[in-house]
Length: 414
Image (cartoon, rainbow, N blue to C red; front, top):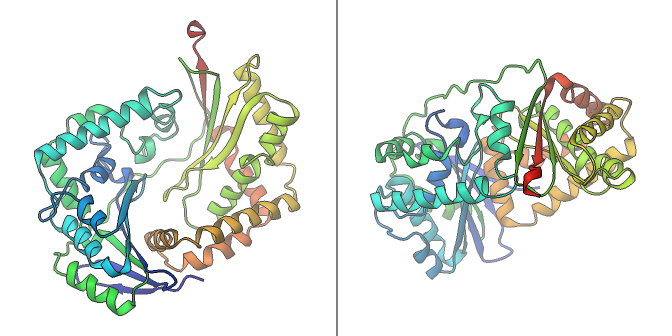
């Protein structure tokens, strides 16, 4: 059970305080409700670019890391399709430094042209290294726009193409910051060795003076139901043929999501999973084969991916995977369901041992619309039955709901 207290500042900032005095550490987590789903189709990659820019200095702090490291603090951030999350871990005696740093960059980020150029180059280099120059790195640049036709999930968090970051102007950057980086679009979690009173006092002191803004309701274009199977074949200089199959599935909130998530565990999580047992171990066709879900706020993707063994054609591999998926429709083993639910429970319980994970979990639960999900979601997972998983399989793993990518090793390169 994770205890917490909620407050809301007049400027719209949501504050969640979680006290834990076991060790003299405080985590300060700021979640901004902005990810790649909030970008324009012709200006993508901005949420991720901002994750970098937020470390480039602000009005009163030319270097974000130096004053933090001087008092024993540590920090990082991440961006995904739905959120951008910043976090600091700091000795509780020096916690005010973290409030000062986070509030200063929320209020007055440095729009220094030199900083923009430095971070632009960093992001472009990351785009090239991770997505263009790495085997299979461009998978999501190919798969997302094939699977999604309307929704902003049709491009990855890094962006649709490098030119969008190359062409970003200072005006574009300011506009994005002003639209998304303000108290009304943020959730602040203070967790650890601090009292609720002290956390509220420091939040009011450092974040209270930041002007509030009305947050307009953004209309994100929803994806229509897919009615026909999609297929793409590409060749590249990669070590082995690879198969990727994705299916549209429910969004992050509610029992249908957890049924799908557990289905992915049953099919492709670890060496005891059905796909691994059938097609890696018993009848070796793949060197690796897994299933997982993207876990996005809006309806996302159920993903199956695997690398084929030499001598096995990709068509044979695809047919074998489809046969395993079809076998699920005949019924789901109750004992296997209990096993994956126990795995999910142990993962959740183990994660909550870590203070930073609790802070992030509280922020994300609030983002989903119900902070108490941090305490109740496990019960929801436990309530999923074998019949729920079977129904999920029948709803999701339909041929007309599939998008398949054959990623073939270019024979000329061997």
